[in-house]
Length: 77
Ligand SMILES: [Zn+2]
Image 1: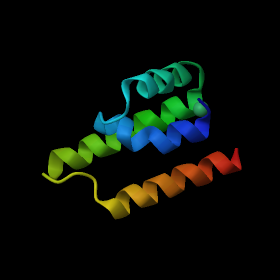
Image 2: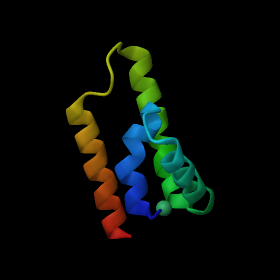
Image 3: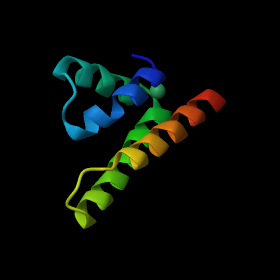
Image 4: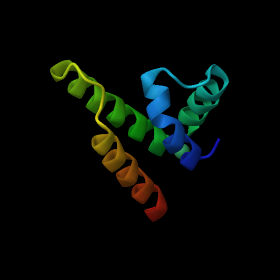
């Protein structure tokens, strides 16, 4: 799996909805890719903070903005 694949699967992964085989692939990538590790870690914390204050899942617009920001970041590097 490449960095872009990680970003694409990130939301499902953090929601625990990702296919177990894909999740395993994603985790393997994280072991050797510091960039993605950081992105996943930051995103997970953001979602946890959000979920602790709101009873609803991350709204679509927040998700969209987050995904766009991450995609931009990957394009730059
Ligand atoms: Zn990566």
